[in-house]
Length: 373
Image (cartoon, rainbow, N blue to C red; front, side):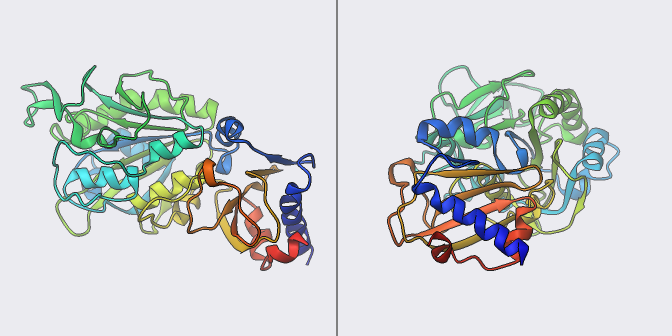
């Protein structure tokens, strides 16, 4: 009963924000404020996420392999998802799925491609947050399908645009595409790192890719430890099979280490990233719950209800240690944008939170209409 009252009281505080924006712990955010506040109060204390995408190695050929000592050590100290899968074959649709919530109908490694639809980089930019897409050996100008010829790889070139999904979207923010080198700026909400076609294990094998990870990941881990960062190391696809079993590892100061057997895929990971930064969900988003479960305080809840009064532009409530965060959104099925953020009377809104707040939420059904009165 006390939990019910406590959580209802918190909901009342949130919904009362339209009447007063000066109550303790409540901060209605303008679009210009959102870039700072969201980046520092994201789910479970994550300030930024860095994704490294490796290539074409099935789970069974990487985990337990003597050719991958660093990857296996990373899996041992982080969260290893033992039932993680690509969504398609060949490579390109997997990158598109993780970046845009859809394979965009692509069933090959075709190039060039050009899309105008929504995507992770555009989402982040629209909410005042930054995205950086780092591709090793990327050309300094232009947007070619391949670059940096090399006789050392069977593919003939080290850079391949099919592994660089932000290069295929016309609305990706200016400056999103950059060349990767050790020491790049990680002070973005989301960093996406693509090694070249040798170092990603595609052409040169597991041992070469593992050596690249051993050379590059420690500096990222060190930065994350001091800046509340989360590292995701995953693969685009496994072998050409229906199972498409891949390695996915989470590593960072907020990660609960261990092995997690729930099924996830690239859509699950995109959903997790969007949930972390309070973004609307794109396309065929998968279930992010298993990933949230690997984050300390990362379990989430959602409640919907009808609001009988106009809400402020945006409300973020920081409950303090252990309870995580709570966001108030428009309806779960309708993506919001700064231009159409303010719900009107009678609109459905969504309340989403994390951490120990989930215990308060599941203790009772919350009627937001009554809470607002």
